[in-house]
Length: 435
Image (tube, rainbow, N blue to C red):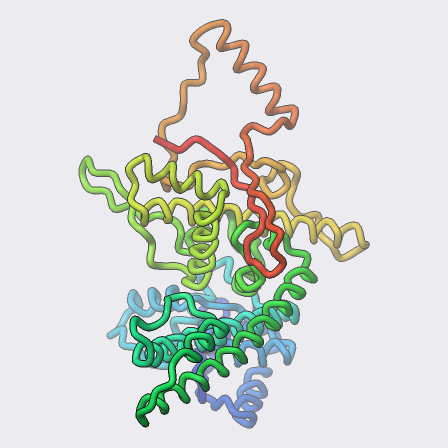
């Protein structure tokens, strides 16, 4: 970054800015409205510095509307995580009280002192995926609310109520078996019929939206639908929230972002890890649903889950291990898609970039990865052979690895014949767990 940095604390109706140069010299402060006139006044005021960069806190949250408007006007915008701004505010001199002016100061200082901040870019395809994924989440929550209300009414109309997994067809069949004679009963039946109608409308919308999501994910060239348990909604959510996978240096950073990296909770001689509550919870939910789909079917994920149970782990700990492994699978698939698109761009002509090298795990067919059960590897094995026969076997194994032969075996789950199911093929690398 060069020139001046404009730190912005965005809100729904206002935006507070602080402008500093590369030497951290204060140039200006201000507060503007976010309506048309206020936004144009802020942009006109800041254009007195030709070489400027905007640093917006929460560019994917509260600051998204202003960030998108700035991008549409050709401005350069960087995303400042709220956690980094909070750290600057706490450790800064003074009373460390929270206000819009102090927030803008913390944001601009983060942009000046931090390298590797994510620069926002205009990507219409990802914007469409994000909108469709958000809409599907809203419809799913609405469907759950309708079902809860319907269960409550059916419990009052029918002895024993209805089963947990209820469809509109089953609900109509149950409702047809009751004919209440009293006025409250007839009212309950009428309300239940209206809720069934709303459920049918919501189901049709969800079906159409799922088809649109499938077409959008397929058009993006992503291979996430090949992962067993990842459907169109999950793939769209992953692509929309991840954006550029290159911002994650390795699979461990990606697992920390998805909230699947285990947290060390050891004490003395008791070594254990607990579930992380941090990270992107929507991504964590996608991986959880993928893990449930793996466990319910004859997949490598089920075998892995059962093996963890036999090792003495609780069901929650075993699920955590499975989600951590699935996070690695998703990361490798995203890197492979990124490498494929980069190669296609480079073959198309100028403007492309070569992407990952053939030595990276993204390009390797069977990448050798470490364990996903522990944050740190165990002690290294002995490198010297104990006998001439062992030395011969070690030399042949090394030669096979250098020649490109796969070092580990891979698991492949069978494909399903259902068209609308969210379960797809998954390849998980089988590695030995660290002690």
